[in-house]
Image 1: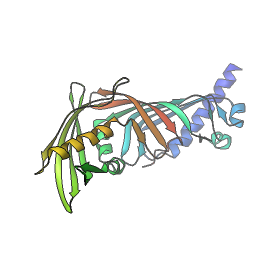
Image 2 (image 1 turned 135 degrees about the horizontal axis):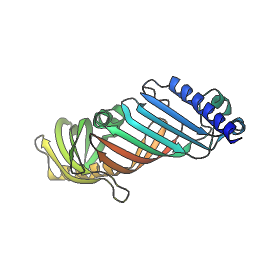
Image 3 (image 1 turned 90 degrees about the vertical axis):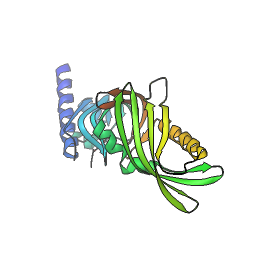
Length: 247
């Protein structure tokens, strides 16, 4: 009976793997493991689902070098599961491990998703200053540090100008948020101390946000580990739909 149950799991997992792979436009490799049996599938239940992928595009310009998602008992669509497509009846929480290469990270930093998040207003001595991020570049110099260089466009009092910045930060750990160690403006005339202080405060708010909300999955990052030419993210994932990884 145990062998029969295991064969059912393997057959369902393989079908799910083929079904998910057929819907993926960009993924070098995808593996699915479903812990269940045929009777539970007919009831729309699975004891656990684990997905591992290499070179997976979660959203346009948001790519991960390696991805692991694992969750316990979930409710799934029984008909789609039998056809090899694991579809959720309701959102689930999962443990996630994501590895992003430096190239992945810089592509993500300059994606529409991130640049749209990096548009905001600053209050500088009662005056509204609109800031719009134009580009960012991340380097990993070692010493557990992240270095960001970027350019932003400012709109204030009817005028528009561009400034550049340079910032150094340490990654989030399980006990500490992202620590902004240094921030300064490297280009642009007439940048006041009041503006710089307001901008630094806003940057701190942004980097301390642990949440990444994509189309089909939201992540609450709990730990970041700088690796050689990349960063490992450990997170709690709120999955609305198992990722199709479409470009």
